[in-house]
Figure 1: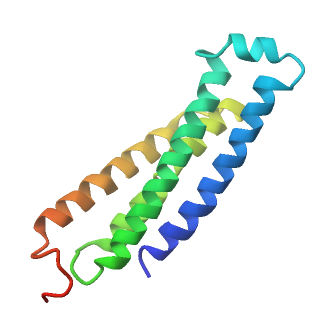
Figure 2: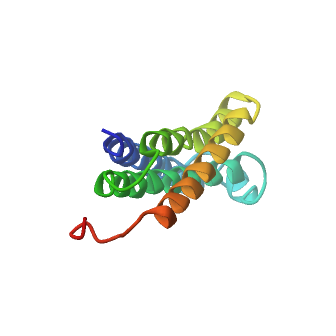
Length: 139
């Protein structure tokens, strides 16, 4: 069922990136060498880590919202399976940022995820524009 997985994976991803936020708090306030971490607030690994945390939660929330809309309007929208998969693929963006930070991988996953999420959001917007009527009571 398209949409259900977006909601489930969205909540799970949001939970993981929220937990990652606790790691960032630890690094800022309690870890040995916290001064160096704080001083690199807008550069390097610190900046990239915060970027992953913010985008991870944003893209998770977008998946929850997109999943809900796909479930609710599944009988009126077209291409819901494709939109669903594109939104899920979008989660590669924040995961890709983390793989850059921690493993030094190239930003290919960041690009794939960003393009997929942007495409899913635009495609869903167009699908809603083309939908005959928004009121599910008037079929």
